[in-house]
Length: 430
Image (cartoon, rainbow, N blue to C red; front, side):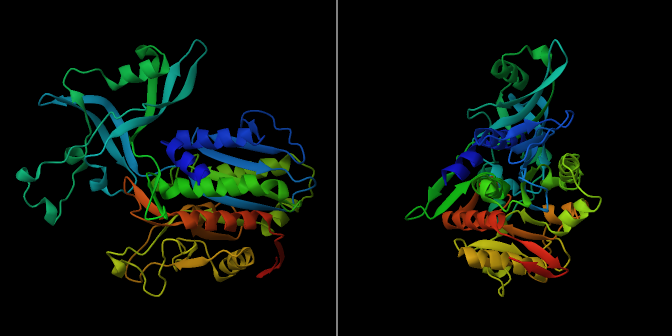
């Protein structure tokens, strides 16, 4: 629980989530590599790589040749507001100028303390350097319009982001965001060349319920899955099947389609696997055989049935908070789970004593997509989509169950440790 909560609290932006992952990999003895450098990979050692400061791929080298890959993939970003301009003044007030990132519940961002986090690009004597920044204070608010001036607001409101959702920074004439960033970084304002900044809810992850059965936090989608899969990877990697290389990936920009050089639709993960394989002796057919003997879990969260709106869930496939890890299906292949990959994952969970729930959208309600189906464009690997059940997905603060964190940790740990072999098309040895 502490591992997940600290990861949620530290991951205030995709850059901070990546940094939190890197810190835990460093502590576990993994070696950081650079894409622009030569790689010398040693058997039995762990390595990791970042791209764009917001995506991470980590792996552990088997003692002998790579006979397959055992992978999980999650994402580092969450719906939020991207900062466009330093400030805009009107009617005696100063506001930041922001635009939406991802599909969010806009009303959930109103009337709560916010701040700013991300990265800043600084001029140095040698060139340009990227520095993560988090203004760790209650700094902003998006104030709602008083009910006296909109008597119909409780009947529903059509939010205009340019009008309703621009955050209040302070009174006219106050210090600028650039000034605060420079002060935080110990830099001169003129040395700030550019920045990638987002708004951050100030609430920390916390337990609730009579015995702490539930928890609430910003960014449960998808940093909870990222943290759980990372913990399972670190716990299980030294004990994994020697012929199979365990891999953990956390990719950016899922909430806006993943179409970036560090997203799931990019070649980042495939580039990394190819380069690992090229660094070791192998046969001409070795990589293709390894792919055929591999398996990937796309770990992104699932909607639990909402007690106030049970009709929004598929009554034949109810997902409950505290009911266990979720296996996700979609006829249009927005999720990658098939009967084959679902069967393999179910058997892994059965042996580990982990309860499995099934999520499927109502037939009259289209759902979203996630990383797996996009990663399939570059990786010819069987995949299944899994996740934690949660409520209020894409709200500023979301809700999930503590028991499901343990269930998913146990499931993914068992996945990394399983002796999984493809005996033929549609047949596996576990």
